[in-house]
Length: 311
View 1 (spheres, rainbow, N blue to C red):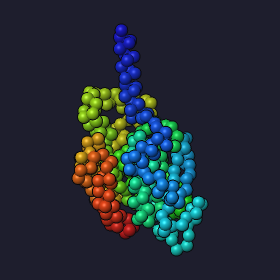
View 2: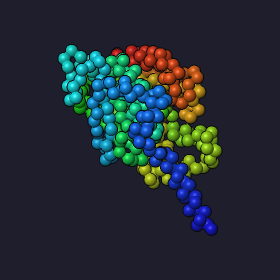
View 3: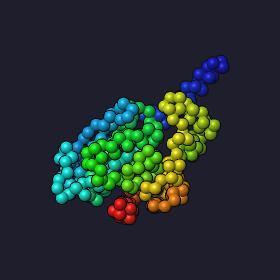
View 4: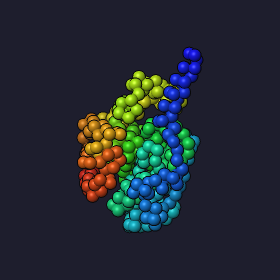
């Protein structure tokens, strides 16, 4: 009887850890169709854009599916050779990171904004998402190294005279913040509805949505370490933010209860300087852009005008 109880408990804990490490993986086409219905992806506009699809090998052995989108002001060829007279425009690059259980097509709404601002845009699928290779999802811990690999590619293709901005939503927001701990080449960061700390996030979600006991978190953290090599406490963007010198814009919907709004406020307060925050009334999780597109773009342009253009 005891063995059966222990076996059942072990199975439950294993499945619970899968909620983080191995979320349900939908096909890329299924995700894009769902994003079309939600208004985050317009296939006809996407197909009309000039794009360069490429694959990068991650440091952990799986492929990363990437796409470079170019604005009308920058006539890049497929080999990314820069045309004379437009080098400064073409070398302003925005690298976009999507959220948990999504794909790069969900980044398209932000890609269009940056393209209109004259940026070259890189969108890509995180590990275990979209068309990229399978590996444990790590809520930003390993994903930050994949982001560094994408930025390495930008420097290899465009040279050292580039200005890179990173933008991330939800898990992508945590990723762009955690990335600052291992790479200082990014000029500005925009973190939309990012969590400040994975342990705090799980405590919030277990209490609000699942009603599970809190003692499961350290147990699950140890199980995650045994399976994937990281602990929840290591996924703590606020720890990185406290020491970061890179300008950061925090964006969050005021009605977000999935990743609570106070997490962005907490990180904004923790950062010493070179920071801004935009809280959007009426916006739930990852809905700030939809609720106020004009305000979102105005704040982003103002932030980049204050920090990127002066570097």
